[in-house]
Length: 345
Image 1 (cartoon, rainbow, N blue to C red):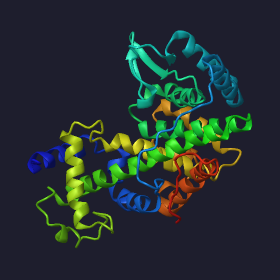
Image 2 (cartoon, rainbow, N blue to C red; image 1 turned 135 degrees about the vertical axis):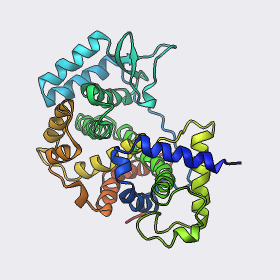
Image 3 (cartoon, rainbow, N blue to C red; image 1 turned 120 degrees about the horizontal axis):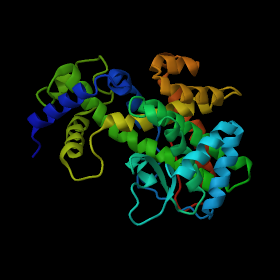
């Protein structure tokens, strides 16, 4: 049985602890966005988890060479920083049995007194893509805790830029499509979790303890407290999901601020990737360098030359579908065992 008093207390504590986070400040805006994405983006035909097997084998030396070659296109300083970190053991591969963290968790840790960013070596094309993602975390590690939303956005953008580089070099289109679709599937899973987490926090924030307000009473409020399509079953499902994340044994724990970093990073990177010009990547790199100076969110969006508040939800959704849709079509056309479909806007 769910202890609703404890649940409300934990929700309130989470709100207070994270009250300055971008995600919490924008709870109301996120409600309808998540609702729209949940309804319009659906990559699963059978709603089953899809696991990819990467078949193109790439040795570690080749992966490093590919990363260095790509970084050289951005500037020699990036190659120098990569080489220095790799040689010092701060950043690199780890395939030992007592590995500190697996890259699949996208985590960085502390080993031997300094930050350590490791990539679990798999011997496939995926290795170099993960190296790029984690390398850009390494570059802005000094501000990672204060601007996680921006660092995830930068890493997701740069990993996709790197995949375009691999395409130009003639590497397997199927393997590259798998990597993109994995990001897309992760985005969809995050949307499902955030849909309930955000609604629960917004209700707690605006109306006080949940479950003491009848769902029909809540529906009377139109100030973006709940998704417009929210039904009675969604309300009870919300309580069940949030409680299981707080107190259950599943690997998914209640921390939507962290989930939102990957969600927002995928949204904004898709928006920029589908509108990319010759200066877009330069702006991303400039932002990456200025993170160390404690740049504000408004300052960051100014560098990117976007008005974050004027971007319509439909533009975000269209961008994600457009950018990742091509990879989904590639896998369908290649007659993979798993097929994909997503609803049109």
